[in-house]
Length: 603
Image: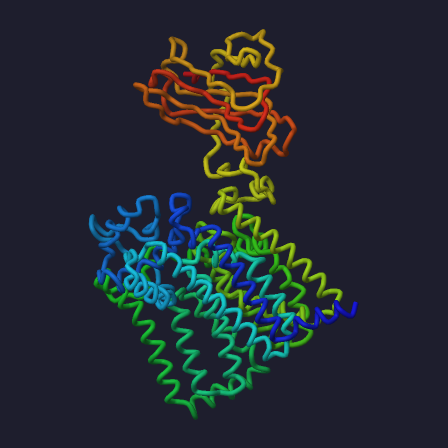
């Protein structure tokens, strides 16, 4: 027991903080390297994609444009896309004409990445590497930038919360949960080119500087606040709302007002310099739009607006199964008991925390794409995770050792849960944009290959009442053939993928659209199995995939038989092909009672 107490007390020492931050950084680095193979890319370059993709490719594209190619409209994109034909380096930008592209994304994220990009570019040229802006070293520089801004965020939170008298152990619990138990982890490791981890770091640093200024009122901190606010704004303008959280760091509005009056009476030159710095950063965004379009404009999202101002999707943003904050990052459910503690200890701070989070959530939930596209969870909320973690850490500080232990256990479970979500999204088990409660329940905690891609293709279906049955084939396991014979006993089990059934159009089917039903019982013995039914058409010996029905979610568990009703349809007619091939693909599994029914459309 004495050893245990000493070990637990060690977590409140500075040495423990240093060790744990090094371990956390190493784990994040190992996660990224495992997925993108930064350190062994030459061996695995055909196996992995790039970390510059989707929205991230739009944020990143300014760096090669301005620092390498010196163009205005990404004219180098054709060259890079031809060179890296399998990658989606320009998924986030849109064509302007045949040779030029346009980028709607704000420039702030690129500014955050720029020191890492420039350093890598110089080193790549020095050592004779491929200095094109997109080779693996540049991708690693993006990951390094994400790690650096995460570290800026956690170090800022550590310093900030220590100023409130919070123990290092309580802070480390909160930081660990935030880093590995929420979708912040995904945007550090898998999508480091997105804006969220950069805003996370800057917002945490901004809050630290607010606290410093509230205590010391130095000109340096005031200038820092203007700089950070400008940079935060040109990453995502809605994050300017962070100013609403400033009163949290004061004891009353009177105290805040006294500080404001003191600023204008004693620090006018610091205000002027801060405003100039803020204005310069805003000007960079105006200049960026002007260089592309020839107009002075701040926002390039001209066709995207806040469509839900009168009907904000707040329940969906917080609790929905599509992207809900607390569904995909349930570690943050700790905020509810934490608010009770905050209310009991500091009602003024509680009020301003509530004001900020409600307004910020309302704004996010009013955006036309309130689920923020392809992502893991409510990614737009990551930007203000430094705010959300504060009351949670305050609560952990006030708990006794028993309840702290419960929080640690809960945090560990949430980390495991979040790592499963990461795996599901990476392996296309979780749909990147179109989840709902039924789908979520189907794949809850599932990691088997049979669940991959199931939600990414529309399940083929047709109404039997609209079709006429023409004939049925049964599979005879002993002879391994399909036969047009209802007397065949097909109950005997068959291991593996069934031999294909080939069909040719005849007088009964030639004028009808293709519609085929497969009924059978399926058992799977391996999580790596991906069972599916497939339909191929042959024209002049060319094979064409017409339809796939992924059935993984219909096999609930291993080593049990489940009835399968797979339907294969096509817009083509039977007579459009020389022949059709039907396959029940079942590696590492068993099939029995297989029946294939051919239908024609009722005219």
